[in-house]
Amino acid sequence: MTANAYSFRKATLADIGLLQAWQANPHVAEWWDAGAPYDEAALADPRVARWIVSVSDRPFAFMQDYSVHGWQDHHFADLPKGSRGIDQFIGDPEMIGLGHGPAFIGVRLRILFGQGAPVIATDPHPDNARAIAVYRKLGFEIAGPAQTTRWGLILPMLARAA
Image 1: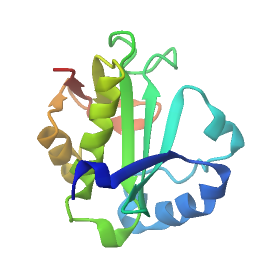
Image 2: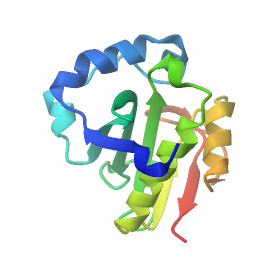
Image 3: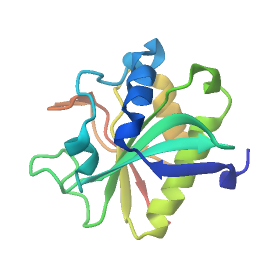
Image 4: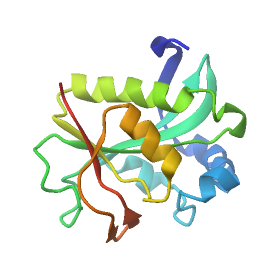
């Protein structure tokens, strides 16, 4: 799949049902907290950009990028100004294992670095070997030991602009 095959559109209230359906899939529910459904306030939060990811006009994933400085006690708050955090999941089970994860995440990383982010951070669960392998493939490095945050147990990983 070519990079330009992936598109990102802002998630809207019309996507709530799709997001809930995706989050109910076991492969997503294992790692993604479905207890906090999105609502109008969450989607309007200026700290977080939430995206529906499509390939060839087929929505299949969710991604968000956020200001690591948007929360006073965020575990990445010591990163340079303009740094972004990312989280995502492939919601459509038919799209797993086909190389879409590294591909669309890589596209978004290039966009964020192109917009001036000096560092991009992510924080998978330490037991999520698949996610960690994808992040390593994309140039992320482990940035410290696993730690418990208010968002759960995480493994801090960072990628720096070239």
